[in-house]
Image (cartoon, rainbow, N blue to C red; front, side, top):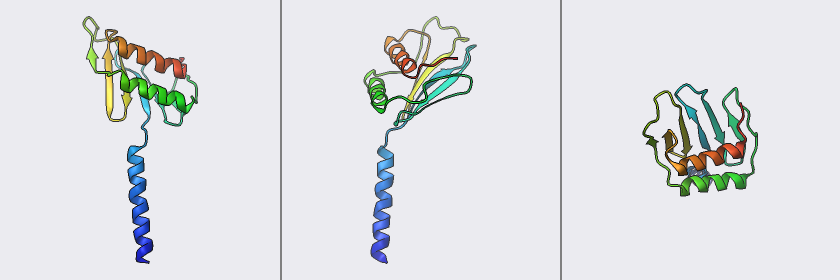
Length: 126
């Protein structure tokens, strides 16, 4: 019985460790300002969800998700408030894991490129 309990405990620890290293979803969207906000979530398996009122592809290939994750990680994104961006402009954001990157305006080409690729991958439409 003690051996069975030890095996169960080891399996539980291994499962927790595996889930801690599991890829997290990609979340991106638009918030604030006068624009209609939206939030898109791309799961590691490629399933896509969007806030109500918008249409997207419901599924993309897992290899596309891996490519987008790599693109986000390699772009060295940062949060930035662009000079001249009015307060009523909405803010674009991208979240990967515990990191959220925000851009208020259009002054960061790397962020804009990654964001455009995310939009294209899910084919976001109102």
